[in-house]
Image (tube, rainbow, N blue to C red; front, side, top):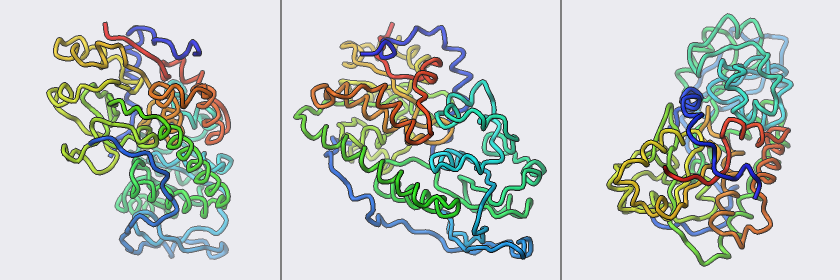
Length: 396
């Protein structure tokens, strides 16, 4: 296996990663059976059809279309959009859709050359870091800068109240998108609906369908491979990031990378009633000890904190620790939710859990393939320079 899959360098990068972790996002049991889900099926998403327009500010010489955004707001946007801003972690999907040439502004973290390249969509498109910074950490919007770069439309990954406030201040259409986790049927459906909406506004509808089709193709492949194994090892994800440094007991009962494989996620059991959706959840240490997972997969950005926790005597008895079955994966929640990393992680996890079924898969090559499809370029090696990578590691 590639040298990048070996044990990460010890905690010399710890303090550095504690700084990097500040770019993480605010993320909003029993074995699952690997199945191929019809993701074009309506999963019951409902929206609130409130109306919010800025008719008085619309250019009378421009043709507009009326859309309903993900907050249920009715918004008039130009039929032809040439200039766009993505606030609140919504820029990622603009890049996925192949519309980077329309982007006229970025958020501060995305434009920060010290941290921006930790995000796959920025690492693959570094020229974006030179654009005007129009917002700080999904808040503190720089209204004058926004007006100056003259976007035709603004996407925002938050609620109607934030969108209305910005729209009122700058006089530019603001469209709410879905930037929360995927993982369950309802969440996946919201993501598809949002991506299609953005594709329509950006005149990238064909690309939106291409993305959704490719995601379905990857998920089908993952599910089929996993279904051919009779093994169901118990697994657990640690360090599920949500707005700061998290540790061993912060997890996700419906982590997409586990869901794609139908894996035996110890936190996913109705008996524990932790969460019905993919979400950050903190469990007590006694619960984790009782679960005693065979494998632990940790967000590679949280290794320094988790490594310290694993020095505690009560955690040394965990099977994954004593049997040296701990692995790092790419950050899924990292300034928003990275669908590319989620898929790449799933192939790596599959390789670890089901080596025979994933014998033909090189996880790094697969990650580069996935990142290239979503962002335009391979970025795994660049991410790995910051210890954001696949690897096996041991507790000291």
